[in-house]
Length: 189
Ligand SMILES: Cc1cc2nc3c(=O)[nH]c(=O)nc-3n(C[C@H](O)[C@H](O)[C@H](O)COP(=O)(O)O)c2cc1C
Image 1 (cartoon, rainbow, N blue to C red):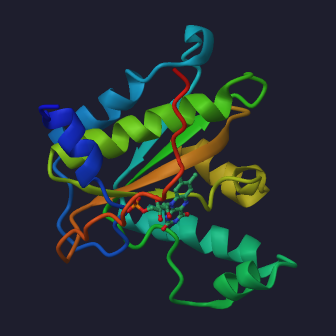
Image 2 (cartoon, protein in one colour; image 1 turned 180 degrees about the horizontal axis):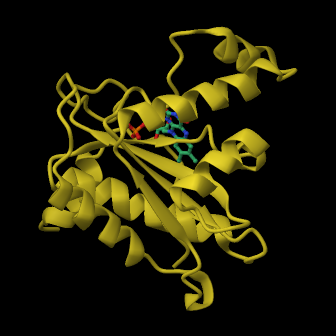
């Protein structure tokens, strides 16, 4: 079948974990976060919310608080991250979009995941690299120090984070995607 820009963008998107210092242009960030708001939501509830954070000092403060929580973890892998001064969960990307939702909503996580995929694909279509960042999930955004910071930035009261998107310009060429595993699709006709 003939390809098109959407199909090409889906194939060309890669998770990027090393960024140059070049900031993402504001109009691109606006377009990307607008794409997030156009994602489908269960029962069209649209209760999700997006913080667009581009202030490096604030991102560093968030990372410090995440590391402080990790340091208390009983999981050795998390504890090691907490104790590693060089650990930066968002890879020093110049922008981070934080997707949150009201946890009592039945499809809170799914709605955020759809929005994040819109972010990743629209970013790629504009030449911006991205990566899903999970460290604010799994209860991290409920930790008092982390929650207080997110609230002070404008996250709605009671929201939990279901995923984040690091955004920026990668400092090396995008790798090819690995071949897709066999057996991922079964047709029933
Ligand atoms: C739910 C979810 C959570 C993820 N969390 C992280 C993360 O915290 N940090 C990270 O570097 N990549 C994260 N990723 C990216 C995956 O590691 C990546 O999509 C996978 O390795 C395939 O690579 P690709 O995106 O380049 O195709 C996450 C992806 C998903 C879907």
